[in-house]
Structure formats: C-alpha cells, structure tokens
Length: 246
Image 1 (cartoon, rainbow, N blue to C red):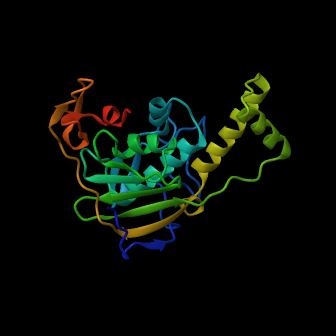
Image 2 (image 1 turned 90 degrees about the vertical axis):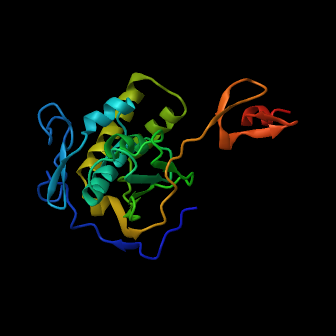
Image 3 (image 1 turned 30 degrees about the vertical axis):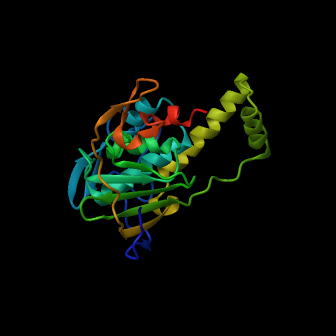
C-alpha cells in the first residue's frame, strides 16, 4: 500500500533549469546537439553542485525504437527527477512509480535506472500522466504531473490525424503525421519545466523492496512459477493460468 503523506506539497518549478540550458529554453534541436556532436539532448545534469552523466535522447530512441511526444515527455520527466534526486539508480536506491504504461516509461527506465525487472519501477494503472520518484531509505521524493497541452491543431491536421487513426498509411498521411509529431517533440523538449509540469516535493511511504522467492512447478503444465503466485487446485500446486482454466 502506497500512502502519500501530507509532506508532499506543490511548488513552482520555475527555478529548476537543465544544466545546458540558455535563457528559458532547453538547448535542443534535431540538428544541434547539446551533449556533443551526433547526439540529441543532455549528457550531464547538475545535482547539488555535482555534475552527473545522463543518457541522451538518442539513447532513449535506440532503446524504444521510435520517436514520439510520449517519449519526449518521459525524457524531460527523467531529467527533472535526476536533477532533484541524484544519479541513475545502480540498484534500488531510486524508485519510480508511474501511473500509465505509455512510451514515456521507456525513457524513465533508460535514464533513471528504475526498471521493471530490477523491481524499482512500480506501475499503477490509473491512465494518468503522473510520475513519482523516491529515494531509499528516506522516502523523500518528487511527484511530477504533466500539465502542458499541445497547441490547437488546424482543421487539416485533425482530418489527417483522423485518417491515420482509421488505419490509412498513404505517403501523404504518414508525412503529415510525422511532421506533426516532430513539431510536438520539439515543443516538449524546448519548453521550461514550469510550462510542462506541476511538481510536488515531500515524502511517501516506500513500496516494498524486491524479494527473491522459491520456484515451484505446476502440477498441470509443468512450468515453474514463483511461490507467492502458486495456487492449490484439487490438492495440487498449480500456476494461475491452470488454476483459472474451467
């Protein structure tokens, strides 16, 4: 059970800025690389006066497979979390709680080291653009809610998007959709934190750390399962799929 404590309070994030930023915009474009030639995005951020390395947007693209606005949101969320809480998690010292299963979560795994397999990424199926990051063992952290909205689309853009949603993949449709996505990505990567997010800082009750369980073998299918997921049917230990079969 995760309980948000009253110590979590909203703060304006206008004073938080990426290390490589000039004026009020994130240093970025598809042709210019903040982190060095051939890369997109940062290769370092500042945390408590210390410069720490981070993955670039190119690294995120390589892992995820395509570029999209959701991935850009995840990238920006992760940069903010690292600037607030420190280095990428080597083990479980940093915890992420995500409230959707969108493309953004892949960026969070790459940049923050909070991953499903390591047990420090927790999914809450609320369908909300909200991301919470906590430090072990203190429980201190940051809750980031996306508040930014895309500029209103033209009628032509809405029609094109409607055709794409219906399954059309003609060259003219793909070109227009990719152009729209690229423009949105540029806007997300270039906006200020205070434009993109509502931020709360404080403490929460931490989720349990990852545990290692004994493996049991299902009496029906013969496949192995972790002990707490085992069920008993007709006096035999079975896996959940076999238990649920009529």
